[in-house]
Image 1 (cartoon, rainbow, N blue to C red):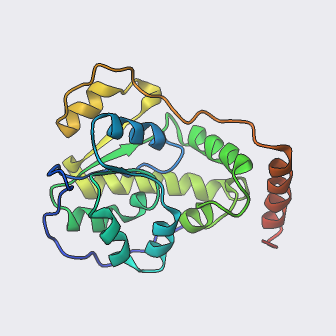
Image 2 (cartoon, rainbow, N blue to C red):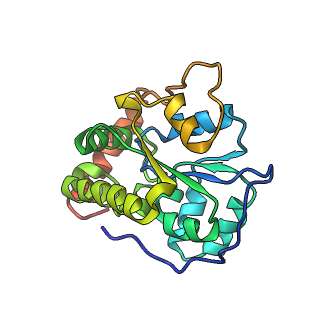
Image 3 (tube, rainbow, N blue to C red):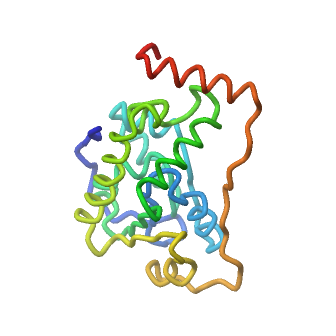
Length: 217
């Protein structure tokens, strides 16, 4: 499952509208990205989260369109940013990167699979990001993708990236120390707990998962 690599844009030193260096969350989805986004917002950053349209633009090699939107914000998490950290590091040389991870690759895969069964059928980012609608149909490929992403991002970014795992106790102190922010006097936000979807959605996802397994979808 190789990512599409594109030549980066300019190497200008671009910061957020408030003068803050940009901070990109580049952990894969279901690694605590929503929690990270909530942290950024509580710290006062102008934040941009998940944008399926920007992921589609990136995969379609419309990188300039993605940059145009990124230029308007200060902090980011979820798609498409994990796939484009190389381009982001080049265009925003003052930026920092936060790589959220789970306590194990298996924990991440189970969470991603559960999310796939609960999400709206065919209105998600998994096919664009991973190449499959349902991770259960390609568990080995997803585990390999997870490990490769985490290892390659750290090797490429060096001291510009900090690995954080909420499940292992990382909270405000570790995040704020890295980005140079004061620790807020507020509880740490653990958000985005799973919810039980409607029966119709669960049935639709079950049927589509089987269709993909048999290479129909």
